[in-house]
Image (cartoon, rainbow, N blue to C red; front, top):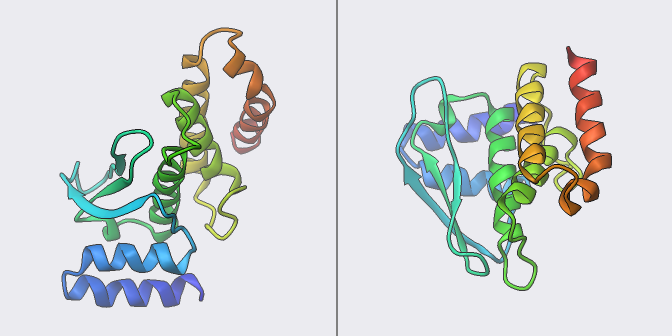
Amino acid sequence: MNLEQVSLHLEAYKEHDQILDAANYLIRTFNLEHENFAGFGFREELSPNSMLLTAEGQLGHPQKVMIPRNIFDFDLSLVLNMLAHEMLHVRQKAPGQFIEDKNEREFQAYSEMLFHQIFPQIPEVSDFHKKFFGNKALEYYRRMGENSQLQQKYAGQKLEVEQLINQIS
């Protein structure tokens, strides 16, 4: 199914104020499901120009992804990348495989938004958003601690992020 067809489905959901159903439709359509996913809930909208999604729940327990009601007022490619980011957090917090360090989780999730290694079916975003996500990945990399084991583990990926940002700039 192409993005135009998906957009038409989303419009129908929006007309009937079925925002959570629309989000579930995207999760199914783009194969983002995971057994640690506890469903969607609503969070406060930031503004008409920005959105925040979060995966909420304790490490090792099911995660609920909180979305703003206006999520489908944004570019579909951006929405899909944001959902994939949170669904990666759902996986990262699953029992038996959770990643404890928040900086590592965020670095992985922002890197995924750039390179789509785990979710190759997710479309790319604009260069503006790639640069933003790349800089967020680098920010979390810095927070891992200078020359820490985590930084060493992700040094290669960090270089890829920097190269991508340089290509865009």
